Image (cartoon, rainbow, N blue to C red; front, side, top):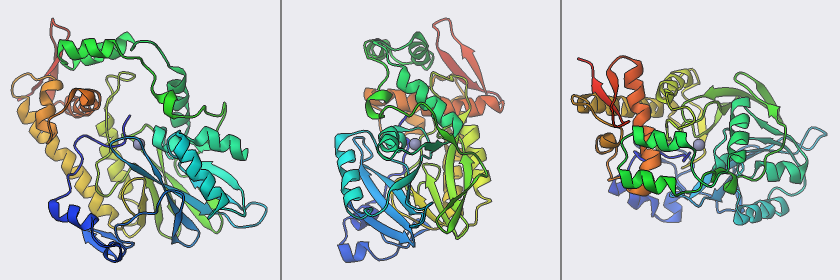
Length: 377
Ligand SMILES: [Zn+2]
C-alpha cells in the first residue's frame, strides 16, 4: 500500500540540479514540465509551518519509506466557539512524527485547540497518527466510510504468516518459486505497526459534502483507484487539497491486492481523472507529496497519457501469453528487486486487468496455477 508507483517519473538531470539550487532560487516561482510552482521548490522543515494562503498552513513530516516526506495541512477555523485547527492528514505513527506534532502544538499552532481531524485516505502516511491525534484532542476522525472500514480491517489482520490467498496471488502472478517461498516465511500485518489504534467509531465524509472551516467552504471530491474512496477537498476560493489523487511529479500507486484479486483499480483511476477535470483548471493544488502547484488539467492529461502508453506497450507485449511477473520490464524503467515484487505485481496486475475488462487481453489459467494474459486480435 505504498503511495508511489514503481513507475514514478524520473526527474531529468536538469531538474535534479534545480532541486539543489540556492535557497533564494528555490523560493522563487518555477515552471517545470508544464506545471507552475508559485512558491518555488522548497519545503518547510518538520515541526515548522508555512502559510500558503490565508489560514492554510503547510506542514511536512518525515516518512520511513523510499518516499521521505508527506505534506499535511492545518486549516485555521478561527477563534470563535467553532474555531480551532482542522488538520488534514497526520503522518506515520512514529515517535519522531509525534515529537514534531508536539513542537507544532507548542509553537506555530499554539493558542487554539485542534477541533477537526480529516483524513484523505487509509494509507499509513495519511492515517497513521489519526487515532493518536483524535485521542489527544478528543475529537472524532472524519474520513470516508470505505477508507475507515478498510483501515480497521487491516489493523486487526495480524498473522504469523501470510493468508493462503496472498500466496496464491503471487503464484498466479508468476513469481519464481524462491520468491513465493520467501513470502510464505514473512509475518503478515505490517499496517498496524505504523498506524496507531483507530478510534472505534468515525464521522463519515463523502462525495459532494461541504465542510465549512473558518470562512471557507470545502467540497469533498471523491477519487478512486489509488484508494477506494479517497477524499480531495476543493475550496470555494480555488484551492484543492489533493492528497495522493493528484501529485505533480510522482505517479500514485494504482494496484490490485490479494483482498480483491479481480479488481480493476486502473479503470477507477482513469475514470477519476475524468471526474477531476470538472474542477476549475486554475486551482492551487496542495498535494500530499512534492510542492504546491497550478496546472491541474495539464497534470491530469500527463497521468492519463502515461497509463495509456503503458497499456499499449503491455498489450503488444501480450502477443504471446505473458504473466504479470514477466511484464515488469515493459512497465518499469528500473529492474525490479525482490523486495519490490509485491508493489510491482499489484501495478502490473492492475494494468492487465484493465486490458482484460475491456476485451483486449484474455486470461489463461495454466495447469501450473499461473495466470497468463494474451492479446485478443
Ligand atoms: Zn496513498
